[in-house]
Amino acid sequence: MAVIHHTTLKPTKLELLTDWLPTRPWYRGGTDAPVLEKSGGFRLDDPEGEVGIEFMVATDTASPERTAYLAALTYRGAPLEGAEHALIGTMEHGVLGKRWAYDGCHDPVLVTELLALIEGRAQAMAQSISDTPDHEVSHALTGAPLGAAGFTPEPADDEDGTRIPVPGGAVLHVHRVLTPVAENPPLPPQDALGHVAAGWPGPDGARLQAVFMTLRTA
Image (tube, rainbow, N blue to C red; front, side):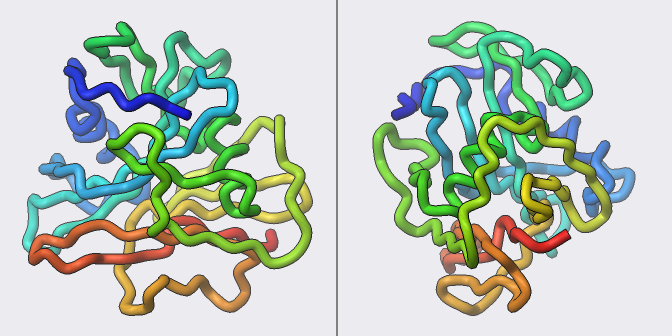
C-alpha cells in the first residue's frame, strides 16, 4: 500500500492546478484564474508501488458559487513516455525528490486501477493517511468484468468532462465539475453500467456528495 509522506512540495499541487485548470474545456471560470482549496478526494494503490494515484476535489473559491473540480492525478519518479501532452508540471518532493505530475486520465496505471475499483477488485484509500481504506467511496458495476488491464487510454475532453473509451465498447466519463446531490450514496443515471461516488466537506460543515465517474455504453 502507498505511504503518504507529510512533507513539502515545491510547487504545491494546488499551484500546479491553478495554472492547468484554465486550459481545460470544462473549466467554468472563464478568463479568471481559480482560487483553489483542497476539499477532499481519495487515492488508489498502484500494485507495483511506483505510481501515486490521487483523485482530488479542488474547489474554486473565487466566486460565491464555489465550483468543485475533480482532478485525476498521477505522480511518477520519471517521465511517462509518450505523455508529454498530459504533463501538468513537475514538483520537488521533500522525501522522494523530483516528481512528474500528470493528468491521470492519460495514465494507463490510473485508468486500469479505476476500472478495477468499479469492478470491486481495488480498494479506495484515504487521501492523506497511509494504509487506510476510504469506506465512504461507493462503486458498482452492472454486467461482466471489463478485463481492461494493460490498454493505453485515449481520453477526450469537452465541456462536460473527460471521456475515456475502454475495451468492450464502454466509455468511462470522468465528471470534472462535480454536482452535489441529496442521495446518500449518490445514484448514477439509470443507463449507467457502473460508477464511482464519494463525498467531501462543504463550506458550512455539511457533507457534499456526488458521482465522480460513470461507465456507459459508447
